[in-house]
Amino acid sequence: MTTLFRHLPAVDQCLAALAADTGRLDKALRPVLHPVLHSVPRPLVKDLVNEFLNLVREEIRAGAFADEAQLSLAALYPRMLAYVRQGAKPRFRRVLNATGVVVHTNMGRSLLAPEAVAAVSEAAAHYSNLEFDLATGERGSRYAHVEALLCRLTGAEAGLVVNNNAAAVLIVLDTLCQGREVIVSRGQLVEIGGSFRIPEVMAKSGAILREVGATNRTHLRDYEQAITLETAAFMKVHTSNFRQVGFVKEVPLCELKTLAATFGLPVIEDLGSGSLLRFDADGLPGEPTAAESIAEGADVVTFSGDKVLGGPQAGIIVGRREIIERIKKNPLNRALRIDKMTLAALEATLRLYLDPELARGRVPTLCMMTRTLTSLRAQAARLAGLLKKRLPWCLDGRLEVSVRRGVSRVGGGAFPEADLPTALVALNPREGAPMNVDGLRQALLATDPPLVARVEDGALCLDPRTLDSSEHTLVLDALRQALGES
Image 1 (tube, rainbow, N blue to C red):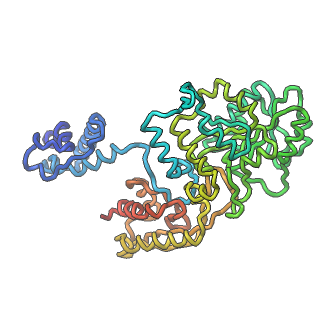
Image 2: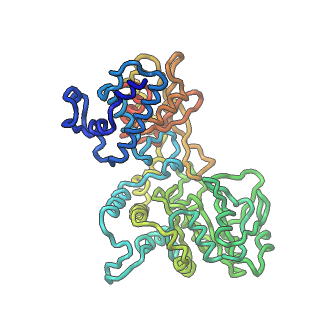
Image 3: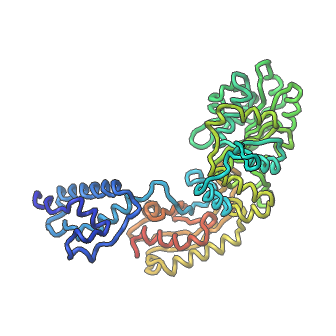
C-alpha cells in the first residue's frame, strides 16, 4: 500500500496537466492532455486536485487498486478532469425548468423580457444616471426612473420601489403605524413562502396587530367596533396563495375605504403577487390589479415585481403622494432600496406594459401563463419525437416516451385554485431498465445544465409550458448524461 501511495502524481504535476503545461511533463503524457479551466482561480483548482487525490488515497486503503500503473497521471487524468470540472462549476447556475410551474420560487421566479435583460447588461457594464439628474447636473432620485411609469400604469399619485414585497409591507407599516394598532381581518393573516407570516412582519415594523372577524367571515361592523384612539390604519391582505370557499365573507375594499374615511384612517392593501393586467379571458380570474385597488380607494398598495408582473425581485409601493413621500423619508428606505440592475430591469419591464398586448408577447411570465393548449400539445409532440429519434434508451426500447394530459401552475402564490391545462411528455423506464423513474429524476439534477422535472403517475413528466423550444436539445443532452449515453 505504501508503494501505491508513492506512485500518486504530485499536485503540481496534476495542475500542470490541467493547464496543459506540457513543457513540464513527460512526452508520453502529452496526447491525453488539453487546456481546461482557464477562467477558474488556481487556488480553487488546487483545492479540488487535493480533494481528488485524497479520494484516491481512500480508495487505495479500501483495496481498489492493485497495479501501480493505475495510479499514473495518464490513468487518473480523465477522472481528475471530470472531478475538477464538476467542482469548479458555480454554485448558482442555470437549470432547465420542466415542472410546469411558471413563477417557481425555488428556481428564480420570473424570467426577464429580452428588453429587461439588455437593460441589466447595460447597467452592469457601464456608469449610469442612477442618482444623477441629467437636466440639472445635480444629484437626482433613483425612484424618478420608474415612478412616472408606476403612476401611469396604476393611477396612483406617487410610487417607490424597495427590494421585495415583504420589505414594502414592513416600511409602510413602520412609517404609518409604528406603536399603534392596525386592524386586519383574521382570515387574511397569511403565511408566505419560507414560513414568513404577515403577523410577524407587522410585529417587526412596530405596529400592533388587531385581529377582527372570524377565520371565514369578517363584516364591516367588526372593523368599526375595533376602532380606538390607538388605531392607525386598516389593512387588507389579498390571500394570493390560498382561497377560502363556502360560507365565507370579506369586506370589499370600497366599503372599507368609506368607513376608514369617516374616522380619518388610511387603508393599506397588500396585493402579494400583484398584477397590472386582468387574465379573465385566459381562464385565470380572481387576482385584482393594482389599478383596481387604487381606483377603489386604497391609500397605499404594495405588490411584488418578480411574480405575475414578470420583472425583477422588487417590492412596489404606490398610493397617495403625501404617504409615499413620508415612506421615502423613512431611514429604513436606505436599507431596503433596490440596486441599479433591479431598477434597469423594472423600468424596461414596466415600459412594455404601456402596451398590454406587447407585454403579453414579450414578458416571458405572461407568455407562459397564457399559452394555448394547442401550442403546448404541438411542442410536447415535437419534444417527444426528438427524444424517440435521438435518445439511445428510446431506440433500444428501455425508455417509453408518450404524451399525456396534465396541468401546470402559475406559482409564486398567484391563482392558487387555477389549473392550467397542458400536455406532458412522460418518460417511463421499462421493466428491467438499469434506472427507475426516481433514479432518473435524481440523475437529471446532476446534469449540465440540471433538468428539474416532476414524477406523476409513475412517470417522469416534462411540461413544455416552462421549456422554451430552443431548450429541447438541452433536454436531450441532459437525458443522455443522466442515462450514461453519449
